[in-house]
Length: 302
Image (cartoon, rainbow, N blue to C red; front, top):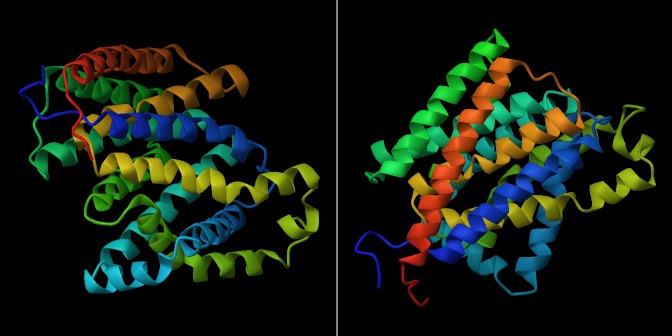
């Protein structure tokens, strides 16, 4: 029997969860390229994404239609802003991982869901379920504990959180399919990306002058690992409430935390462990609530 509450789109939920798990595992990817300048990596990431998305859209004859749609709907200002925010998020994350502060990246993605849920409630007038309210309170408590454990303002963590919250909100204002919106965003960033690639050519430790075969393989697939989870996220952002997407984001920092602690041997004090433990409890509560809702919801046929 369908729930009398707003339905939870199962495909949107699966897409959102899959995107966040992939993002969490991307730490391995950027660690493999940590010898290169973060801005150079971002340049290659954008260029590779444009190439991949141009092929994808071009083979389907959708590039011309995309340009017309964006112009007709006057979406360029929103797309340009989303592009800038996305670039800020990418750069901050790559810098933090390259510098060996994966746990700080985790803190940024702990803060982001709180911002996302705040936008959902205060800007989009979404209603929070009891389980989501508990999740938000536990998340806020964990952020306070983790910030205190650092003994300083975690600048990169705050930038990661603010940029990702803003990007998620802007995606809801773009009535385009996930491949279309991402293609438009990367095209906006392309001139700057080419400039970054060309600028770094003069350095002896640039990618073309120093990368070995294994690193070139990672560079070759950087467009794929960028586009796939972003399209999944865009699909989810258009189909499920922000108050549901927000808590899903906790999967990224949990993965980052475990990698930083167990794989990359970063310091884990008692206070940090307590902060992350609060989020684990929140995830359990949210997961049980989401499963219950999904089982009681009839998915509309598209």
